[in-house]
Image (cartoon, rainbow, N blue to C red; front, side, top):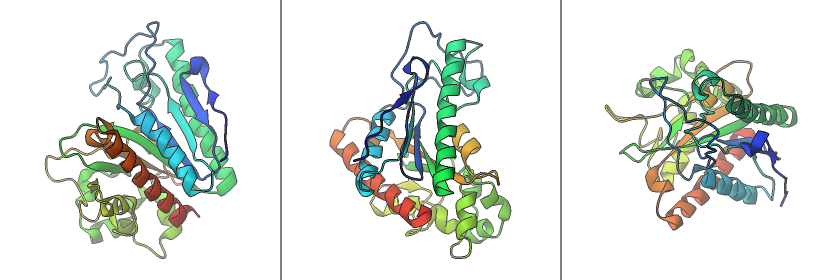
Length: 283
């Protein structure tokens, strides 16, 4: 096993573990530190959420360990926010994620994003392209695994031909670079919900209801769906100059809370699915 010592940001509020694969795992909303000297965020923005995505940090760490097994001890890069979401939200712009002008949380926000940028630069230099996986948790009643490529629920509801024939759709996704590399051999919809060609299809084939996938191509009317937040939007390859793709994975409470055996079995499946996706498309 390749053991890499973690690097910590100011006050240990953020953590970075360098890796050896073209894969970065980021965990923004699982922090367990709630220092009293940092004031809680206020609802100064309409969409402010202050509750943690429970167990996502434990899941992300275990996921990284399991992925190492698939690659003979080579590990993904890992970027972790250790502050609770009531104190900071690193998956928002600094204006929305940090309350007021408190210097401690400003530093913590910048540390987290500088670690992501460092990992991206290293992956670009070492591999030429790569993938960022952003781990989240949701409480939607449908209990789907939601995979976000920065495509809206409405866009996913278009027909396969409408999606494949509209370049604005793939160029607006966070996996544009991947599609550009593979467009001679695969259609864009194959990458987002193909049964044997997409991450969602892989998870669905293991029996985990996933959107988008070949079974659930898009959310139905009134079903909630997270398409991918700040980090996936700014670091993914929807910007043509970016060579790192980004995918947001939203895990339902049923896979995060309660049954430890069920959670561990799922992490094994997720690690295998991501390892397959990495080998298939990032070489």
